[in-house]
Image (tube, rainbow, N blue to C red):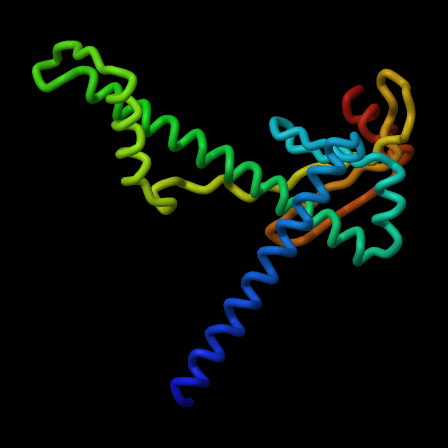
Length: 187
């Protein structure tokens, strides 16, 4: 392979990566819009994805389209978790650097100006590389398909479980799951 072949191959790979990134960005933008429209909700604390029935019906036109939708939702939620973890890590490191500078060399409190604080924060941020931070863990989550209603506490239509590491997904109608939950809580 000549030099032109090398650069041509490198250019094709860069184009492919750019196309992939643009597809993710477009997908994430769509999911953000669905969230803002109230068709999709993510509960980070309990790791639950709530999908409104009209959206679920459209996405369930085939098993493959539903699997792709849930996979995109996982990537979107994982991206948001990574972004939050990165922001929290940067803030923690910046505050630690400012705290260290404000104590001084002889453990005496030093008054820092606002410009000093900003300079210290920028310097610490410039030192940090992404590999310094531990990424969030990839964990399974629950899926709830909710009816399009104005009820205060509506019952889900369907429930499921998705494991992103194995791509395993299980779904069941709520009418089948509810009696089992009542039975297990009574025991």
